[in-house]
Amino acid sequence: MSNPHSTKPIITVQQHILQEQRRFPGSSGEFSWLLSGITMATKLIQAKVRRAGLTDILGEQGDINVQGEVQQKLDIYANEVLVHCLSARESIGVLASEENEKPMLVHKGSENANYAVVFDPLDGSSNIDVNVSVGTTFSILRRPEGASLNDPEKWVLQPGSKQIAAGYVVYGSSTILVYSVGDGVHGFTLDPAVGAYILSHPNIRMPSQGKYYSVNEAYSDTFPPRYVEYIKRLRSGVLGHKYGSRYIGSMVADFHRTLLKGGIFLYPPTETNTEGKLRLLYEANPVAFLAEQAGGMAIDGTRRVLDIQPDSIHQRTPLVVGSRVELADFERFVCPS
Ligand code: P6P
Image 1: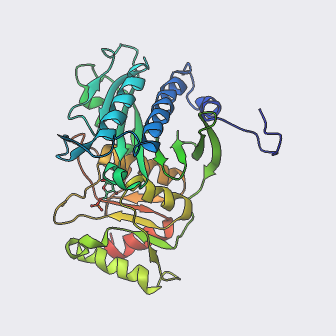
Image 2 (image 1 turned 135 degrees about the vertical axis):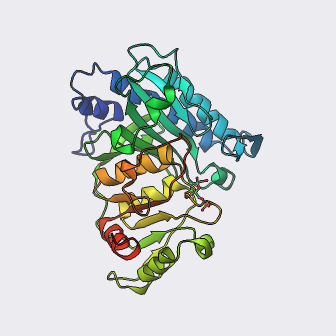
């Protein structure tokens, strides 16, 4: 299908997934069917996010989720929609969500279920009421050898290097799906007129260096001292220019900018969150997978994020992710081996 006004073909995410499907020899289209569960769910979520101010869905649900955070109504909706859409995919045996304490065995986990999906249904949800971008993150893992249906945690407690796909949807000025199946990173913009995700950012490459660092400097008094020194170093111009600062407070939005423009995003250990605030399985791992696929890097301050063996589904990790120049300089300056 081509657009009469352009020489570029119009490729939907479904067409793209089918093309990518070739990377999974023997898979009978189950993987593309799985990913369509995510694209469907995010279309329903974005429709609600776009109208949040109108349908009195704003404001806090009042319930406290497993993270000890006050749940926003949209959090609950987004979680329910993702669980509903993904539970309809027979190839999925286990789901794990930021909003649920334990992993979920879906449709009784049929014996031929080969995948687990881990997700944060609405990352940055505290920003909803003030119309700041929020996002959905997801990570897809293959059922580990010998993992029984009675041990759903084993399906998801795998290092990020085992992800076979990962991505996010950022509900911003437009709704953009970014994903990778290990063959580069590709972005799709939702055309609300037709309800289709259209390929808008083929083969995204993270610039080798950027202009901005992104960190919540309000906590810098409790960062490890070398992190504070490093941020000063970026401001000093020693890397060739004086860095500016951008911080949205919604990881998906901050990472999306870093992916497209380069630079460095940091969530260091702090006094309140000594292990960092971001969750390994459904925040750090997806963005680390995408960063590396796009030519960038992601560490927890000392180790490659994708090498970390998780012990629990909600464990936190510090995160330093971004362009090669900044990350290599960080490693030399903050954590010389
Ligand atoms: P802080 C949103 O609540 C979130 O989990 C991430 O999306 C975001 O990067 C981080 O927390 C912001 O945390 O402590 O800077 O408000």
